[in-house]
Amino acid sequence: MGNEGGGFEALQRDDPQVAGGYRLVARLGAGGMGRVYLSYTRGGRAVAVKVVRPELADDPVFRKRFHREVKAARRVRGAYTAELVDADADGVPPWLATLYVPGPSLSQLVARRGALPVSAVLWLMAGVAEALHAIHEVGVVHRDLKPSNVLLAADGPRVIDFGISTALDSTLHTTQGAAIGTPQFMAPEQASAGEITPATDVFSLGQTVAFAALGEPLYGSGTALHVMYRIVNSDPDLSALPAQLRPILARCLAADPQERATPAEIVEWCRRELGPEADTSGGPEVWREVVGPPVPAPEPALVPTLSATNPWTPPSEGVHPAEVVHPSAEVLRAGRRRTRIIAGAGALLSVPLLAALVWLGSEISELNRDRDDVSSSATPSPSASGKAGSEGSAGGEAAGSAGSPVSGTPRAVAHPLVRLDEKNSISLDAQGQREDRKGDIRLVCGNSRCTLRSGTSAMSQLPVEPTDSYEECRNYLAESRTRSSDLPLVVVAEGSRICVKHRSGAVGMLVIQIKSTYLPDSGTNFLMGDLTVWPAP
Image (cartoon, rainbow, N blue to C red; front, side, top):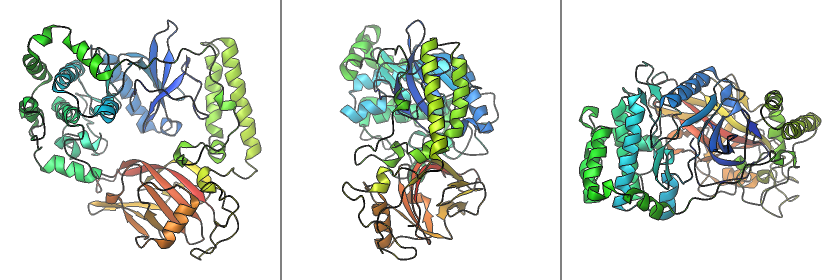
């Protein structure tokens, strides 16, 4: 999860208004750990505030990891890193704030304009290598260097997000042998859960630079398992890269970590290739030409945005259900809001009194509405209502009868960000995630593969660009020849949509948000995703 500088989104219903005394102005980005928001210090300096998801904040293992992130970030200083400003790893929820970098990430820039010119790539490589030198100097390995963790300011790159970094003197390089990082930018030893060293970051630097020069990942696309297999078992093909970059990238991408260049050697090599330009202001000029002017950041709010008090209305057709905060999900979050209210009371001491009172009152009002809503039916989501004009049309399905319509569409029940591992399960009912293996869908791993398995339901992965509706799932399951009680996860990627039909007639859609099944025999595999359930009519 990084500070995706240069892009702003308005705060939504489920966003906090204040974190650790910082009034949040806009969204900057999101990831598996939580969300990043724009805010300002009391002196007017823009900062990026990372707020951890409440679901993860209750996990003691995650808390330990977040403590490690904060500790690592406090130690790192450098011209090409985003400095830590403030943090509270024991907060409710945990959060940290770094200096805001006004510029897009490398992944955003390449998506927008394609491959970068060689001169820009050389400046990029030198800056990121200098950042790695500063990181390694204090005994830290980043472990997740990738294009989305490199922000491009007008004066050069910034390396961010030490979310899975670890101290070099720690023996816990991985969690119970699990491979941690982003598959397309891992080093071979990282993909195979081997020893992590500073050379691991150098391999990821080589991949990141190759991505900037090619406009696409060096090891290609496909499932995470296939990409990791190529990284571990094949030499990189550098033939499509500019000839000037091949010698240094060959050293960065050496299979043996001992043969890789050091960050200091990379900086010196880049300076030689840049020639006289390395001692002039050529770098900033290149970045201004490539990146363009920064997008002006929203001004600090005098009072927190009160969008959380607005009544829920269905968004326009085509919005993904994972992007919708359903009223049923709000009911599930009622317990979490109690914690936020307690935190809001503490905020009275650090933000203007009127602003904090207004925010706290809105939270209490929402909690009271949630209590009233528990006894009423959940409002249908866009996924439940299907396409425009279908409301009230024949859309249900009789239990055990494929395609037998009944009047109306079942009301959706949302279970945001459920976790499925090898010890629990999920059910197509109001409970959603279970702590035992008695649910409708289980994660089963072993013999070098992981599978979603069910004894009660048929499953099928939706094709590209589904409509995300109840009718889409129901009809596809009725027509698909690939539906089965077993779904191999080797063909499932993050963002995939899986339709499930229970023998009772209930239909569910699981949208995969996080997939960690790269080591099927390790016992540490899990999935996280957004589950929407349409009960049996």
